Image 1 (tube, one colour):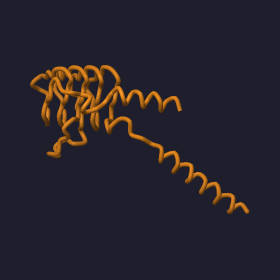
Image 2 (tube, one colour):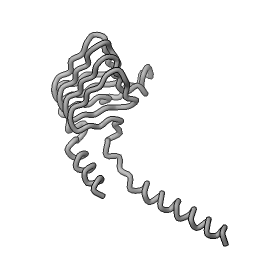
Image 3 (spheres, one colour):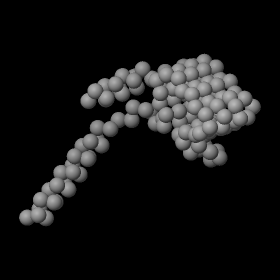
Image 4 (tube, one colour):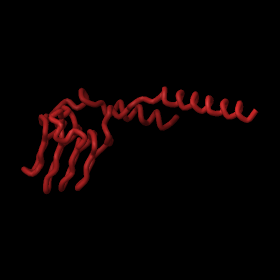
Length: 141
């Protein structure tokens, strides 16, 4: 009798977990960091891609997209900003391309392993407004 009960509990738990995972939608577009506004950080790293609807200010050794470091396979939009991008300080790396709705400025110590697109049509790359609407709706569930 106890064995039948345990089997039922396990099967039910697996079914519930499957239902919960079936509804998962990646609203972030695959970005490790997604912020609706400005992003400022220093002396650290982001393993994957970063997207901010506002300005991005990176200082002193911060690296973005380190999972692609020295692979030779650098994604096009590792760093996406709706505003300006400033890479300042003692250096760091962006292991892929940068797309900014505004300008991109950097010190000579920063390494960028991809194309730099300034005044880019950011909504064609990532729709921050749609993502925000989806996240707000998801948080109300």
